[in-house]
Image (cartoon, rainbow, N blue to C red; front, side, top):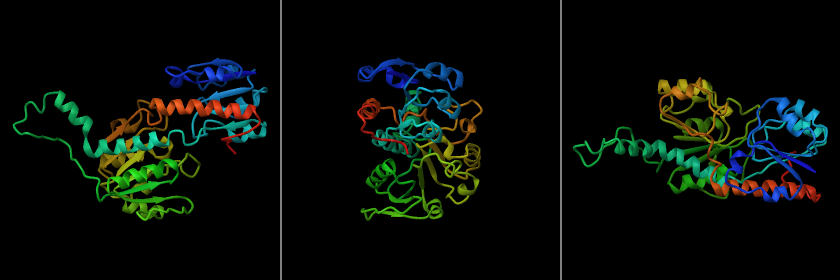
Length: 318
C-alpha cells in the first residue's frame, strides 16, 4: 500500500513518523506546491494521501485513480474538495479538537499582548529607555485591565468554550453568538444575537469555520456596529475578515486593535494592508504549534488511518 505525506515539514522537523511507516510504503515530502501537476506526480499511484495545507481539488481528486483515503492533518477541511472525494468514494478524515487548549491559550496571549504591551516594553527596556527614565516607571502605550470588560465569542465550539473559561477567570463578562442555540450550564455566560454581540463587546474573538456564510464576516457593516474601543481577535481563519476593511478601520480609529494569527493568504503577502495598519498584531499561524499539540496531531492522524485500515472509521468528514 502506497502512502504519501505531502507537506509534513512542521511535524517532520522534530517528531517521528515511525508508526505511519509501519502501515505501508511511505513517501514523505516536507512541502508540496499548489501546482496540480506536481501534486498528481506525487500521488498518482497512492492509495493513501496525508495533507496538511496542500490543496486537493476536484481536478486532482478526479485524476488520482488509486486514491481511497485522504487524511487531513488539521481540524479545518477546506483544503480538500469534500464533494469530489465523496463522488469518487474516497474517505476523508480530519483531526478535531487536537489543538483546543493551545489555540485558546494563544487567543488569550494575543489579548494580553494588546492590553499589557509586554513585548513592546521588554524591547524598550533592552533599548535603554528605562535606563534613561527619571522615574521608577514608564510606559509609552495605553495599558488596560480586562476585569469587567465584555468578551464576545463568535462561534461556541471547543476552542471558544475554553476561551470563555479563561475570560471568566479574568473576571470578564462573557457572551457568545452561535448559529444555533446552545445549552450552557454556566450562569456567567449568555448567548446573544450577532448584532447584540457586536454592540456590547469590548473584545471580540472569532471561532467559526470558513464557510460561504462566514467569509468576510467582519467587514465595514459589522465593524460599524462595534465600539470604537473594541479589540478584535482572530485565531480561526484569515478569510473570516475583510482585511482591507479592518485595516481601514484601524487607521481611522474605528476599532482599537486587531490581533490575528491567520491571514487570507499564507505566508502573508507584502501587499497585505494589515502590515501597515495601526495597532495591528500579526503572528505567523503558530497557535497550533506547541510541541505537545503537534505530537497529539501526529498520533491522531496515524490512529485515523489505522482505524480506517481496520474497518473502524473515526473522525470522518461527512
